[in-house]
Image (cartoon, rainbow, N blue to C red; front, side):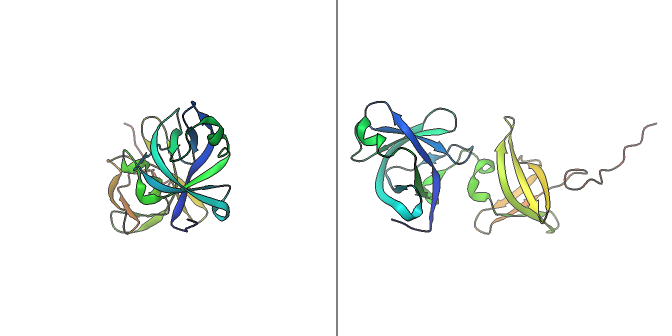
Length: 179
């Protein structure tokens, strides 16, 4: 199942329990819900994968999932999968909020007038909300991923429209006069 439409979900780190559970350390901060059962590929890289069926996937510790595979039903079998990547189709992953979906990375960021401000290059959770890292050439700036700033997300077109406030995008914040 070595397929270029697959993305790496994370790395299978070690067994969980005695009934075939396997901890998966995720590549992203966002913990997805995974549609199961689904076909996955497991291997050190996409060049060396074997197909498996993921039959159950549940939240584990922070930043982890616990995965169960058909035919892998004891600790000894799970240990054979340790330190290998798990690759899945993007369509089987769902995130609680659009703001945390790593599938948005690479989207073009436009202001309300349609001016391109850069591309979404990354995201992280700041506890209060997600922060998007936007790159435009050599420049990098941060955008709070909240409704006040994000007007529209078009996942199919890979375009995100945002509303800027003074000082958010450029350093030319409006001067406040006192007196």
